Amino acid sequence: MNKEVEYISRRYNIWHPGEYYYKMAFSFVPNLTSYQHKDEKRRPCMIVVPGGGYRAVAPTEGEIVALEFWRRGYNAFVLTYTTNFLYNAPLHKQALQDISRAVCFIRRNDEEFHIIRDQIVVCGFSAGAHLCGSLGVHFADVIDRNIEYQNISNRPDAAILAYPVITATGRYGHEESFDALIGFDPSKEASCEESCSEKAAYGEEIDYFSLEKHVSQATPPCFVWQTVTDDDVPVENSIVFAQALRNNGIKFALHLFSSGVHGLSLANEQWRNGECGRPYTLEQAFMLADKVKSGEITDIHIPLSDVDEFCTDRDNFARRMTKDGICNREVAVWPELADQFMQSLFA
Image 1 (cartoon, rainbow, N blue to C red):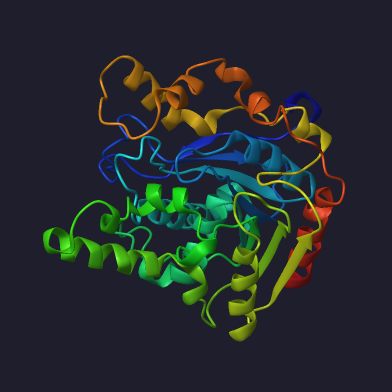
Image 2: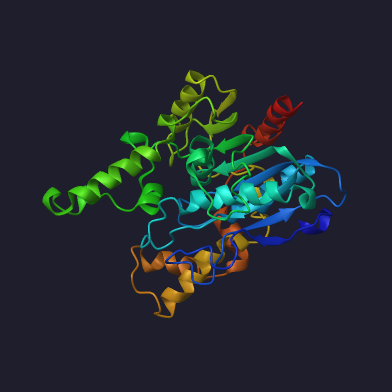
């Protein structure tokens, strides 16, 4: 795939030494991988945020998507953010801080990246879409401690949310994502007398990360798409978020496709064949899997078979993820629709 295009690609750690700490990070630092045009023309920016249930950052929704928008004239980036692979260190707001810093990092270096400062789009998938949506509704809450970034806006100018996790409440919530993000529901593990404060804090976070409850007139425009038959994240997630956008007068587009499974990415033959690019987004998960296998980490809350999956044939990980996939021509039009929506915003 890389031989067919000519672009500049570099990795940038978004946190400076001493700024970032996460219990299960070890040597991992959240980062951006760039896909820039070689000319110096100022272009809109697309930050691609893959999903993975807040447990990993899926390579099937990373480089392949960035290059799709690179071909459409964007300078693109893939964000590899903090995840909770072993369910042993809830993220809380760490991933939100990662994406906030990523937007500020790119905006601060707009001349180097040749991007238009007020045309920064975040494009997320599944839990990655929840992360993009979290920034869209909570950007004002995130305060960067580094003075270099405090006067730089972290608000994206638009968002693409693909089969998004949105609500943390009710029967439409994607429980696995919120277990990784917030931690396990304490009401299922202890009596109220033992952990009333813990339950209250958990309830506050559940409400905070139910994004449909926090849309405001400051939320950026959104392009939302999903398949009606999504068997992992119910389509009602997209619908309730679109309704909240409508109620607050936010410009949005909602595309519901008639059929297709969860995790379709570009839904084309390239995706179907597992030709998704380098699996660098799995850096943290691969590292943690190795530490479990070596015995360095014993506190895990996932089956060892899940760990084994991340220790086998890593170069072909994306191909293994899509081996049962079927390209979907109806869904595969979404990048064109999203691009047209962005052009309407930035005209």
